[in-house]
Length: 196
Image (tube, rainbow, N blue to C red):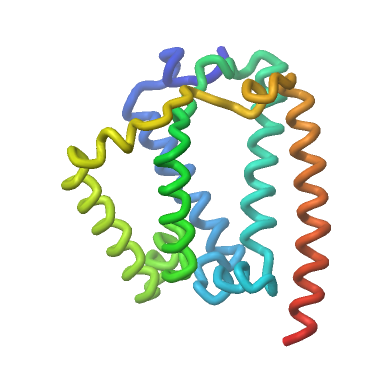
């Protein structure tokens, strides 16, 4: 028995939704425990005085990547069957810019706004409302935006495919980048916090 469980028929749709709910609640719990339900802590990321967001999210990404690599190596997971969101360069760059501006102005990303809202934060709820309104507006204007939404397609693209590097080598490179990033973030944090 190997993963993905849903595609291989080991679990049904209802069980997959239960797994998704459990993972979502667990992820939200750890976001809150790390203090990421606070707009002040999240805003401090952009001032360089508290790099918790960078460190936690990069740790989650690296941990998942290493786990996927070894699960694939041991035959517990078939990476060929794992769904990848297709790459569309232009719309995803614009979407990233909109996301970034929203993060800076609102003080939350979608996940952390839900965490803040779940703890009763009014600004968290306002961000959730703004996010849902944005989804509704996008849905209404989708027919006009469809051609741009599907522009510059590159398929299911990964760094290993793009740079033609073996998966294990890419894992090693990104772990080294993460360690360098953690070291640099500590230096930035220390330097900028001491000035305040």
